[in-house]
Length: 241
Image 1 (cartoon, helix red, strand yellow):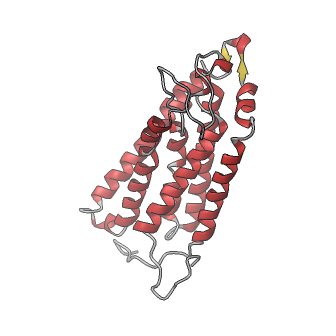
Image 2 (cartoon, helix red, strand yellow):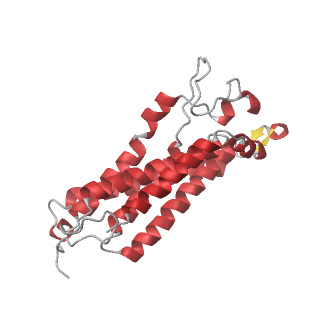
Image 3 (tube, one colour):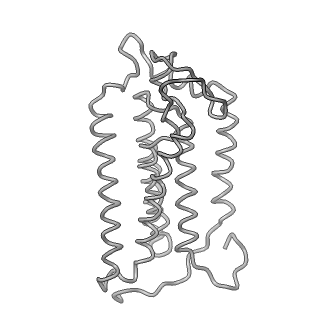
């Protein structure tokens, strides 16, 4: 095995499919704004006689699944960054410089977009709403926000983005290690879903908040891969590969 394998053409990428699924998901989410699904799901995990959302004061959900799990993903990102920097100096890593760079950039962008978007959208968390013991007024995502001294910071889901940012691993691995890449996709989807459910049980997010987050993270990782790493023969003109 060479110390730094030459970069080969990428595996075929069905770009239409990769874009169509998140696009249909986004349309579905917009249509769900016309229903009460988010509110109903939140009501299922809210018990006013037990102090609010059933996971609000859970040590496991807050300290383990939120804080410690997030720190593990951050540690992975820092490790990837160290490996990418090392690729400039270590011969064995040099051939993986682009993959590592794509991984670092994808994970960074998949989490960095959350805070600015929260500030712009000012969506309230379920636990802040009057229906769940808070003081704020509920409003749909695309509706004007009611006046408030405490604007919301709950859309999209930050902790869900921590999990779904690992879609970056799928794209970093897909050309060289396709089987491992599929396992990475399953892990990213599962971890993001578990993080999402945990925060829903705590009353931090509605269901749709986290699905939107998955859509954004997928598109960011896909776009980064396509712009940084995807490499196809020049004669291939079909976007689907």
